[in-house]
Length: 250
Ligand code: PGA
Image 1: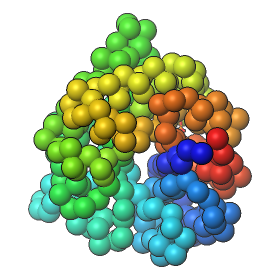
Image 2: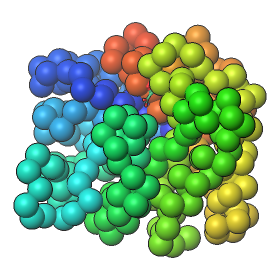
Image 3: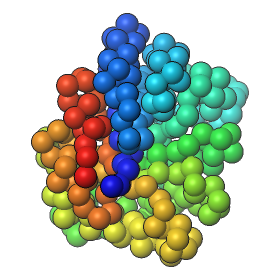
Image 4: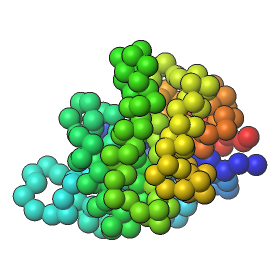
């Protein structure tokens, strides 16, 4: 039986009371769940959810952080502040950060290195736009984002890194990559990790799929050889849709 890593990215949703209530519901319903589970509330709700996560074994994630540790960066959140709140994991390079807020590969790489330096686990997101897919560049784009994002990350530090393949055209659109299409990119990401590090490292890295994952398609995706988990957006906002994904049994 495989163990999967299922993460919920709540994006810019949930007031503090809503976040607390959903986290409590998840903690109750996911008791005994054998998969690794993470939830990433907005920054404002991290403190409220931290206690609930600690007691339940659900990992606490942040959705982003600054490239710098401290200083004159109005509106940014430092890795030290995330550590302060008990955050375990940070999602970096999400396509909304790349495409809506203009984050570059070099920014993302800086964040990856800083998070790892401070002992945070990282979920590094990669994935192509529809235009890039249609131009036959899906593998190339994910590879390039992977190589730039991981520049300077040692094989030892890779123990703390998860990769999330999230085709931009499948995020929040209801369109999911077919399990076969997703698996092809995941296999290529693994091959790239082998080139960058070693065969054993490549085999051990968790590669999540993200993009309109829901209870009805989770099984088909998770059954694929190179899919080790899911980064769930919309369906992570309600226990009734996140719990069946998190309790998936292969
Ligand atoms: P979605 O989002 O599940 O709503 O498509 C996934 C993500 O952006 O991480």
